Image (cartoon, rainbow, N blue to C red; front, side, top):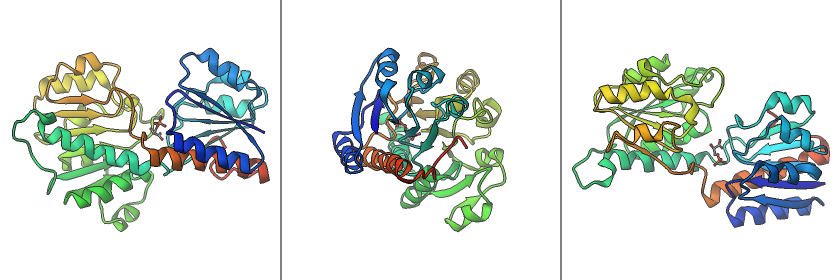
Length: 305
Ligand code: 3PG
């Protein structure tokens, strides 16, 4: 079988070495399409691929149609909003993700962004500390749990809300469970977003919700830009000069947010999962899942059931 790694944003070399040895040990062949710039390159490369390993690469009906032999796509990472699941199902292609494999990397970046924010983006002026501050985690999945673990090391008071995770499970992790998203924003000094981009969550982080943050509140977004209602957040930040917004990936309205100097920062390229460890964990997990699929039809991590 031919396994194609198609990544606009490439994996670290050591991760590719690991993927290659997994794939070849199972008797398959590895092909690479890294740092491609045009969709046409992807359309050409997928023609004879039986399996695909991707990151945030967009897999739509056109790509699936071009990939006549394709049986499985594994998104080496957590969020699969970049894959058209309905089209994949229609083309009888299994879609999987590799949950948890890059979670620590994303969680660590949350604190990189937070220290930067509370120290006034290193402008030399006196800032504040994270110790004793209330951190609200929105969605208690793999990343949220890692954020909670690290927050405790900083001596933060940790709260979480997750519409799909029982309160008992949150409390069992030593985190205060709150009853609603609204309650989380009312309680926390800092809210960290870990929700996926779905029809339900897109644009859900809006004026009314963020306005519940107390004075000096910080919103940190290492999830997806699509969950933010950008016009409403811009309006709120213009009105409330105490608020800060830090994000991993530029919002569409980056230029407008940039006017809030000293209160806004976004990484130039999404880099939460850009570590050697995360690339290796997620990449090798993807290769193993593909091997298991071809060996015995295993679809444990399928997301388009
Ligand atoms: C994920 O959903 O796993 C993260 O957002 C990482 O995405 P990336 O592989 O594009 O860096």
